[in-house]
Amino acid sequence: MMKKIIFYILLSVSAFIMFAPILYAISVSFMSASDINNAALLPSKPSFDAYKEAAERIPLLQFLGNSLLIATSVMIGQIILCSLAAFAFVFIPFKGKNFLFILLLSTMLIPFESTIIPNHVTIINLGWLDTYQALIVPTLVTPFGVFLLRQHFLTMPKELWDAAQMDGCSYFRYYLSFALPLSKATLGALSIFAFISSWNSYLWPLIMTSDDSVRPIQIGLKMLVSSQASNNWPIVMAGAIIALVPTLLILFFGLKYIRKGLLSGSIKG
Amino acid sequence: MKTKSNIGKEIKLFGMGLSYLLPTFLLLGVFLFYPIIKTIQFSLSDVLDGGVVDHFVGLKHYLALFSSASFLNSIKVSFIFVLYTVPITIILSLFLAVIANEKLKGTKFFQMIFSSQLGISGAASSAILLFFFHPTLGTINNMLGFFGIPSIGWLTSPDWALFSVALATVWMGLSLNFILLLGGLQNISVDLYESATVDGAGYWTRLFKITIPLLSPILFFVTIINFINAFQSFGQIHILTEGGPSEATNLIVYSIYRESFIYGNYGFASAQAVALFIITLVVTLIQFKAGEGRVHYQ
Image (cartoon, rainbow over all chains, first blue to last red; front, side):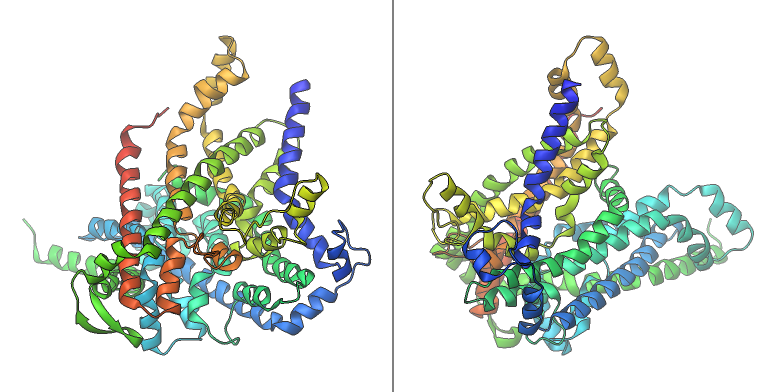
């Protein structure tokens, strides 16, 4: 009994410390400037003014829409391209497969950050600066996604594939009618992962965009931070809350899938 | 002996395999293999605006790296930053994973809170902490003031800025580590604990004699991931300090960004990018090598 109480105290205190900044940011986003000067804990007169003003300073809805479009495209692209590649690695017996798989894994050794300079040049040469495709295409496939799905495809019973082959099932039909439908949980993990990492990416959109038309919300948040010369913190907090709510909700509802995905990528790998 | 139809079949399979892999390797080729080669070429050349290679200059940029106080400083602060963040992040997340792994009602809720940072962007977390760190209005100095402690220039003092960014990074990194470590804990067989309990082992004995040794492969993996993540930090620096004050938080990726996209020194910045690549490569290879032998398996 004593032990239980100690654990509940530890859990509650840790959870509070970890989440308190978010809760306080929500509280501040409803405050007025005088509440900030008084270091108030809760807004004296809660109002949506900060949200409205944030939307006046930057095209908030446009940025949210951009982020949604980019993250959704990346998610769909990763599901299709990663699953096709993983399928070939598991089910199609062709020469050179092992070499290509090692080549794929070796790309995990290249930090994306060390390639940004030539990538920036490539995007300029393609005429893609300030376009959606510049923010979508380079992240349409990740070695992690291919690896994750490959691990899952390897667990599918071999008998199923043998039987399907006996019935004259083609590779592509097997991919569509068996491999994908039997991988819903892993595809779910990959989707959530792809969406969240695309929504939250920062460095790439920062160097790829110079005007508002295609900018995602994370860069909008930085603009909000830079624009607040008069210490108008409620506006910045409102921006931060808007930027984090969509992915935080997805995380809460999809945590089970994410854990599964992360763990099969690390432990069994 | 191969018949003609066998060879035909193999060619067909090869073509089919490649057609499934083509989009993946095309993208990786254009946006990963090609640019890393190109980065190496840039680092050995003088590069004009728009990425046009002017002429080969040999190791000029690399020699310049070693005499650049700014670059040497950014390597130094990157490593100090790793030291500030990695051990603390792992210890704290291990603590969270251990307490959230107890069989208690409501642990699902706590697991969710401890995982929450994974759903929050670095930009949002940094923007929130920017307010907490504010010298006059910030929450942390207000709390210190309550106890009569004088204000600290968390992000404005060169002595504190790196520490503050590290603090932010620890907070932002807890969730990923928590999930990986909790997964590791849940993989440990319950039988081991039961037989240890029968043998009279108490809570702490079980924690230090069973849990942590059996967790060592994951602890090792997590250390490497954290090292790489910390070393490549960018977003929090761009929002919190922009590399300052007086380059106290000019970590290597920020330095590459500044050198190339603000100052336009593509060649010199590429030499830094190659340095980043090599350091990451060495750390990852250490993981592959040592990950096999040194750690404890069940």
